[in-house]
Length: 54
Image (cartoon, rainbow, N blue to C red):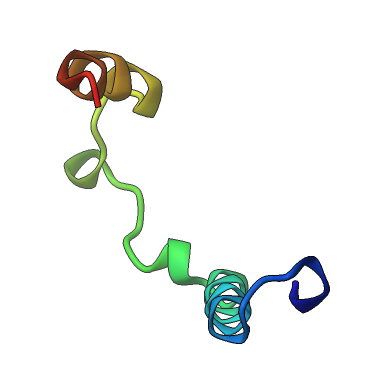
């Protein structure tokens, strides 16, 4: 990352994020019917974000 001109702080942040994901960050909340929505991420983006015209 540093060789591609990324700052040291950004490279460290990316490293820390990837390490946290590798250590189960995304598994902190189990997927259950109570914690899951039938709306896909794509559908949410199309319905919520697209109309904002960011």
